Image (cartoon, rainbow, N blue to C red):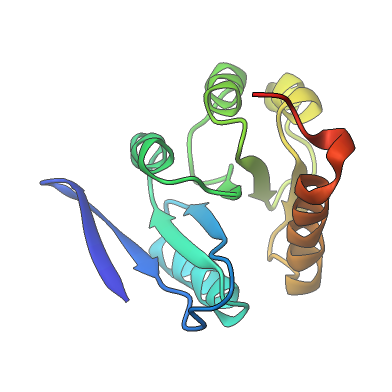
Length: 151
């Protein structure tokens, strides 16, 4: 485990893929609660994903500017976020698919973002099988030529 400084006052944890021969898949985990964030990062590390443990939108923005993450796993119960912020993040970082977690089934205040910018919403506590299903789905979409965009 390494600690990388984004700014002098901000740090986040990176868990490195122990199998150097596999392509490194990076996932940003955004949750205000350290225990939940650590639990998700540990779960992802078991499947050899490289994770960035973050606790604010500002840290997420810095992380996505410096790293190409395949997915962002965001707890919308603990992180204050609105439609505009989610829209701007997904437009600035189209390489990352945004997955949200929540205890609540409905978020009418995020209706637009959920319809147009969020790849999937997962109920908490997160079911590992469901999480890995969505991550495989993202990987398959990336490999499918019909989802490719021209640069």
